[in-house]
Length: 550
Image (tube, rainbow, N blue to C red; front, side):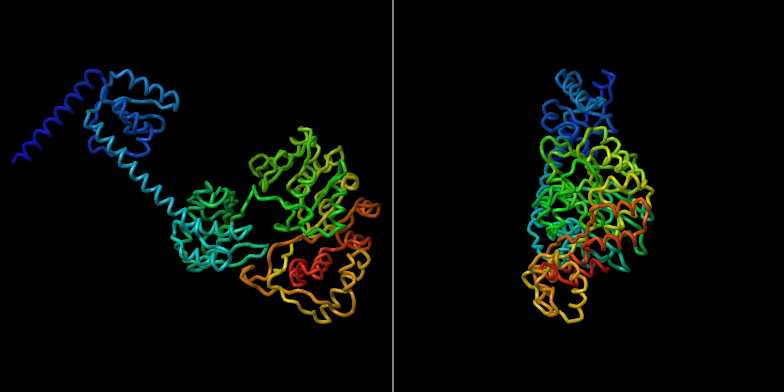
């Protein structure tokens, strides 16, 4: 009975409190609102911190863009009004004041407490998830697959990204098939299947990738490209370039890891044979001219150019790079990222760069006649220009320029060095097997190498006898994820222009003619370079032929 009386009196007091608040609002020409039971939203409460809401007895309850409705207990409180005016100027908010009761304020303040407790819970859950990812025991393909299989749907993408980073993958492929999807990592240039998971997880993974990359969620029948940054709990953030393309069972996704803070490999550690290394150093030591390297995607062209830039970077030299995207960040060099299709092409950047008084220019790729012509003009007017181009061999670079429409008389005097390169996997030294090749195989190798015996280092030249020497072949162990290989090195062919090459340029010779003449002049091909490395024991003949013969 007493409890019922207290409840009744409490309700009467609440009604009187709300009545007084409404009367005050009417007298001042303001709105009145009863916030008891009002659905308070965390994002709206965040407009005014809890401490200031308590001090000034003011609470935000509705927000539309920068228009915010606030409830105040005392609309005549000068300090409260001054505080609102201060926030309005700092955050460009426009406040609409309503009168509330003390009980409404207390209800709102309870919501602050509720959301504060939820935030503590969220932080604890997030920290636990970070610890789970931090403690992932991913050291090879098998452990990466096990981690992915045991990951929850919400953590799956994080686990796969961390796995790719720890295994030093260059790309991640998500490929939907009937009922499932396949995840593959490209490691040392070779795609390797990691895990097959149910398609239901793939749909949520696609949605998260699109959200992180700022891509359209409602588009699945057209290609999309984007980019996002990911920071693992145990390392620095890196960027991922995203490519989505429609396929038979969904959208095929490829993520390219862009580790801009990764250490740049020095030229002397990339695997260049001595004569090639000397030719590159000589070509880039000249004050002007072009140095062009060619090869397919993933052949190490950018890595070579970055290594060259590191040797050229010094006080008193201005270097500008134009890249798509910027793959490594280098202090002391101005790096500009072009945006194809958005009004900032390589040609646009190259024109602008020439007005910046550079000594050295690096153009990520020569893709069209316009860029090629500006690059040639830059090389002829006192600039050293480094770039890449898609061509299958060093001799094919000349034909590629001519096919683009570059004038032969300009091209013939602008090039210091032409290279073509590939990356071959290094054989794992912990599990490699020694063996003696069959006579037929060795005869094939001899046929490639004997014409260059006088130019090959003595240790290799001494083995070029009719009797097959001992070579290495891949086996596989836990250290190399059972692939038999670990790491990569470059194989290269190059041409230093001479009078004969210049004549062929002016004659607009075909690729076949350029290749025949380059071989006659003694060019060591990429295949030959690779076979030399196989005899030295750093790779295998199978790997060389896989890369050079496809």
